Image 1 (spheres, one colour):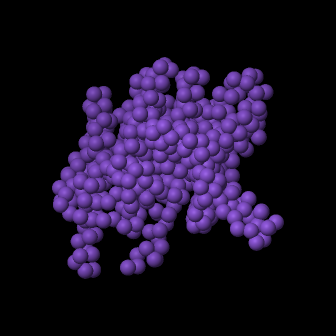
Image 2 (cartoon, helix red, strand yellow):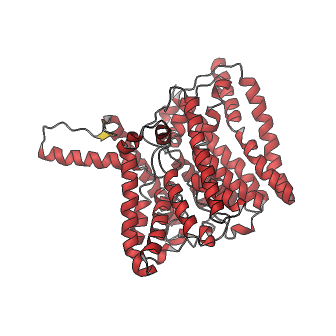
Image 3 (cartoon, one colour):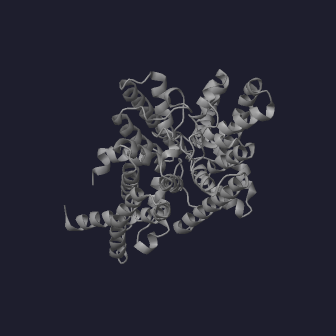
Amino acid sequence: MKKPELAKQFILIRVLAALLGFMPVVMIFPLIMAIALGESAMIRAFAFPMIIITALAVTSFLSLRKKKLNLNARNGFFLVFVTWVLASLIGAIPFCLAGLSFSDSLFESACTFATTGGTTVGNIEALPRSLLLWRSLAHWFGGIGIVLIAVALMPLLGVGGFQLIKAEAPGPEKQKITPKVTVTAKLIWLAYCVLTLALFILYRCGGMGWFDALCHALTTMASGGVSTRNGGLAVFNSPFIDGVSTVFMLLAGLNFSLYYRLLQGKFRDLRDNTEARAYFAIFITASVIITLTLVPVYGSVSSALRYASYHAASILSTTGSATVDYETWPGLARMVLFALIFIGGCSGSTAGGIKVIRHAVLWKQMGNELRRVVYPRGVFSIQLNKRVGRKDVIYGVAAFFFIYFAVVIVTTLITAASGTDIFSSFSAALSITGNVGVGFGAIGPTHNYGHFPNHIKWLFSFVMIAGRLEMWTVFILFSPSYWRK
């Protein structure tokens, strides 16, 4: 390897260390709680990785201040994937020192950063409170994207940040809200923080204690769905809390660039946004169907609407939380929820899944193909946001569907080979790939992932990260063309 190329690789490694510098900052808060509550094991669990990462991050930051490095797509994909993997490994340390096995700890950590509402822990309330706070904070930071934290600091490092956003941001089209990527990152963070604070206040008004309100606000906005209680939000038995959670799960699953446009007074952008209109149409349709199905079960329209809208929002936004055992519902209601796992939230949101925009693109293209049968010489194009969409977007969406379901099928086969029944294997693969967490069968609302073999938990951890990074960022690294000069 030539000296310039070797020097570039060392700089990339130092950039990676600088990117991970956010973790000690996040760990300060659970460390303070562990000290205040006298949780000695957790003090070591947070202090040890904090010291090591801080030393590496500070050294890397100082060494990069006067160096210039323009990232290309190749560098961006590599840094995002490796950052996510290392964050999951480092994040597993507190879980390990709390008594969980390494496989369970890695799964829990990957769940937090990938915002998957799954767990291997049967008794959540037995975990140290500082660990519960860490779990919620990691969900919150994972929701908006680890890389976006560092993007605002990239000019200080002399590194262009848009390639990192492009590699991490969900959805088929990546675009800047503003000309400067750092301004884009700060605006996204501002919207995210304001919504989280509003949700925290509303949870407190609904009767939650400050700790429960904080942790649930962090995970709800991250579309994570994990709770500080074994029974989740059902413990509070509050229609107000369920309603607030439903609204904010939907807001978390909406493209965050729309919030910036709404602040500018561009309300037409929301009205004309193809994905947003489809997103709300899917939610309303699913909620109405499930509500009509549940009226005989709960005896009133209000109760049926409460549970139907909550779980429709939970699955659609890939939050993956549940307040009742929906597997006891009538078949039609369960089928609608199962179908929502295939959809996911909007691009540019904290939600996972295939994304509504991709379904909208293929739906419009299907209409074009039907018209082409009638008018063979016709020229047809799809319209997105009342503008003609690029043709290459259709090709990209079709390719994404292929790789997405290829991952689901392979994960299903490997899981089934471990002894799990085929339906539960498929449900788990679909839920893990879409970062939903909850599903049907062996991963239903009354079950968790603790019963799976260790090698399956490792597989799920990898698939969660791949799903969170929208497949391409991960699988491009396995392409021979990526490594060719």
